[in-house]
Length: 167
Image (cartoon, rainbow, N blue to C red; front, side):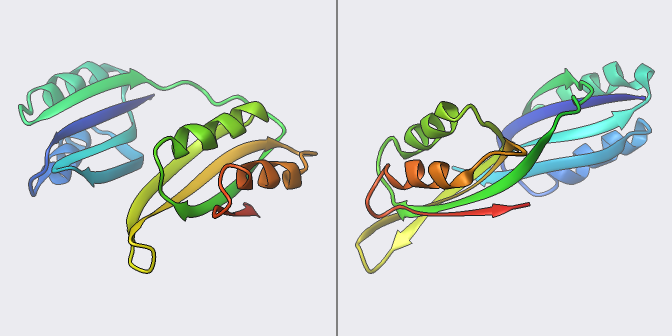
């Protein structure tokens, strides 16, 4: 069995996930994980599946035949064993240009690997602008002190609230 990952984007319409999952199933695939979102009128996401080696190319061929989707397929790799733990970082504050770059710059300064990053903006009626919210899952070394990380993230803006939870 091979593990493959494919990304997709296309104009949103009902039935996209059913068509993709039917194709995976017809090729004896097992749907391992996925993440999808509706963004600016488009359906976008990524999927990890496991299927017989001989069915990888037919999967790509069948997915490519879906004209409404732009799909890219990649071979999966075996995860490395390491001595890290995952931490969830919840971030909330007034939205401003460059906030994602500033957040990821801090994480990079601490040499931390981002496992998952989800964010969105929502109206902040009391302030008249947008509120930025993000959840970041990061790998950290077992002996990592999260206090300096929280302090560094909160220095990005005086209104930024950072909450760090061990997974």
